[in-house]
Length: 77
Image (cartoon, rainbow, N blue to C red; front, side):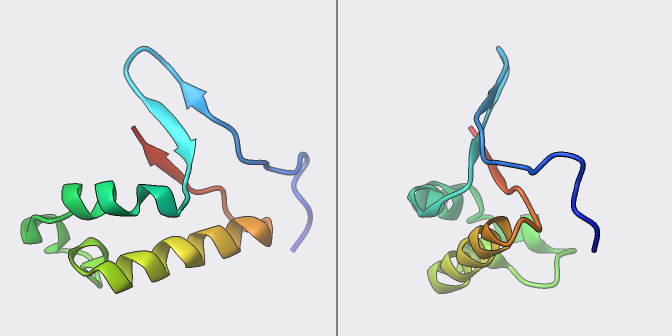
């Protein structure tokens, strides 16, 4: 895969309506709380944020993809 024109690095993006923070494990409990409604996951392959171990693995996978310069995951605050 070719390298991007600029190397994506984690950063905070903010406006008056929302803040996007680089995703990390400190977001785990809040994501579990906001993802607790099973209806949110009706059309998704897995209910990632209904189970703490699945949520932790999903975040760790996202962080690994970020470290490999394959993704830039954010939490919307």
